[in-house]
Image 1 (cartoon, rainbow, N blue to C red):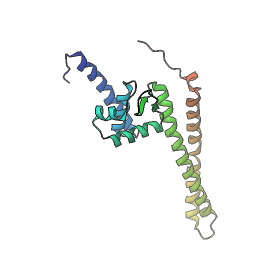
Image 2: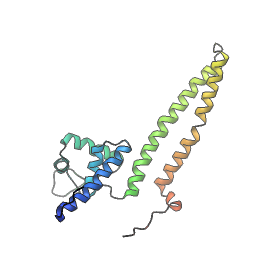
Image 3: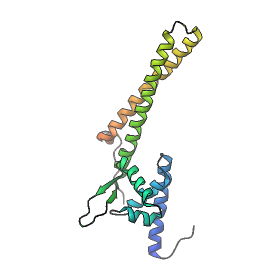
Length: 183
């Protein structure tokens, strides 16, 4: 990688390295890479309008708007009132512990709801199979085994819910304290 000797370009290069890493990381967690790049870009700004985002990232205004909405779903970006401006201004969550809490607990809640409902819906069907007089013994046995396997997954969702609650309440930081900033 060729590095510039110009301080302004070096500053931009340093920011771009982090923006790229955030975009790549967000992609790992199911957020479009361009939305991750948007979040990374916003980290280095006090606030931004959609036009400023579009200009910096060379994306369409509708794409920027959709990206901001996606980030707002996780409270990673908030709208900010700016006196004297008719345009909407947005600011990124800069505290990565809040980022972690907001992002992952919402994803986990969704996982818990989707998968728990699937387990309960499947168990209800399996109970019908198990109690069906017309079902053969092998089918009933398999249905019972599948039901037991599904029920065995439920403690995981309880644990995940407890973990999410511990993060949201801050209780987890008793056991895993936030390290002091060592500048």
